[in-house]
Length: 119
Image 1 (tube, rainbow, N blue to C red):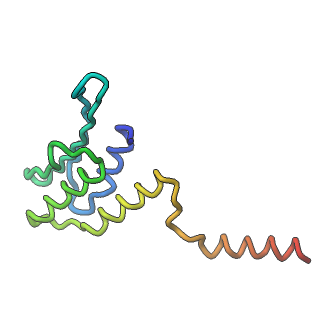
Image 2: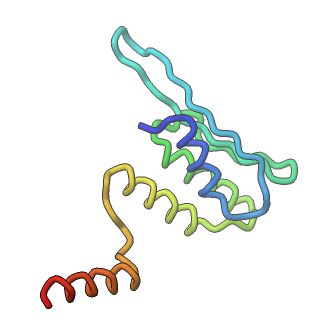
Image 3: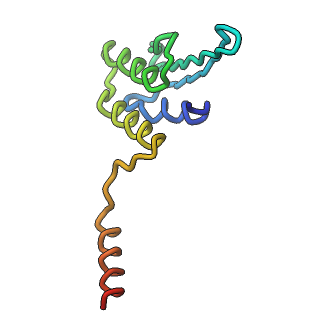
């Protein structure tokens, strides 16, 4: 689903708190012949405390959300809303969905071009 670089960037972007050490890992194992399982793990280290996602996070988005939730539950000032926003935007981008509306400059340029073509 995600490359290691994309997963590491997602884990770093989802954190909105004090400067942490972010460790992201992807591991794969073969359960049965022809069946491969992929596990995602995220660990945030802040001031000597470690907050990690479940060891069997089969979804990269779930692994990031679980690590941020663990830090928030421990009282670290993080924004769970920011993490969910980053996760939803990344998931939408992977699916090809455009979440943002065109800005004012884009609409003005489109109107200007349409005005020139119909004049």
